[in-house]
Length: 301
Ligand code: ATR
Image 1 (cartoon, protein in one colour):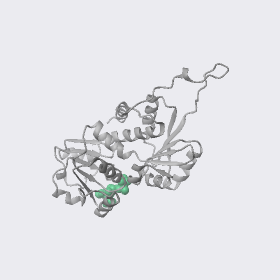
Image 2 (tube, rainbow, N blue to C red):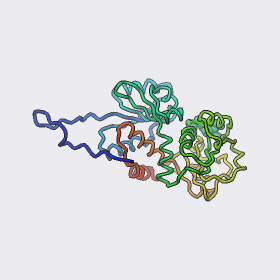
Image 3 (cartoon, helix red, strand yellow):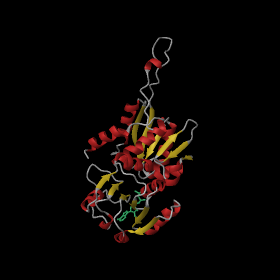
């Protein structure tokens, strides 16, 4: 059950002998680390969560190229930083760096949330899968259980999505990828059940339209004709793009043009995964709905 902690009541704080109220005014430090990072919405999202819950923290951006990642993370922790969100291209490197791994991160083989514990250890969690599931189920009102589902792509992003779908139990899951061996390897790693199968992208034209289609390829940041057979889409299809952009993404455009009942970008996943990271760090679950509204308004989606 989501819950929020009220703002700290200053009258409950211990007073020093001079009668002044003693407050811990040093905020805890968090950041998002990635490359490039300048357009990240995470600082806005976490600032809104902190305002809403009364948590005393700051949240900034850290640019780190792959070679600098370990050094920058360790320095942030040594300087008293409490946690980092990790984004492209460092999620696998963060998995390697973490000394304690949560079960979702273990399954995804990737970490998007690092916590620096009081005993000096680095813990890694992955909140992308739960963010994906919550956005579709709560924000868009689509139950994933029992749905015929297609996931396009078999890279790092797809791994997190397929791992989350293992829990949800679709009636059938097809994992389609340009390089089909990569898809087969992914299902093997995840020990997927028999109703999860793979195919190359052109073979999708032999399938009936799916109820849920997820774009987890890296295609779709740039405008281009997408190499997916349109027969996988119908008016019954809910199409979900892990990519989000202030403009309409090429996948959302493609799915809409081919008649998808609904086609959405992953803005809600961005906010939901952040909410879960915040809950891990602070022990307080923020209300994500007003924050998503603000983010969409700022991005003018
Ligand atoms: P990410 O971490 O974002 O998932 P990735 O691991 O590089 O990035 O995976 C990119 C995904 O997009 C892969 O599924 C890739 O297909 P391959 O495994 O065959 O490389 C897919 N992809 C990238 N460019 C593509 C293209 N031009 N056509 C089809 N699929 C493409």
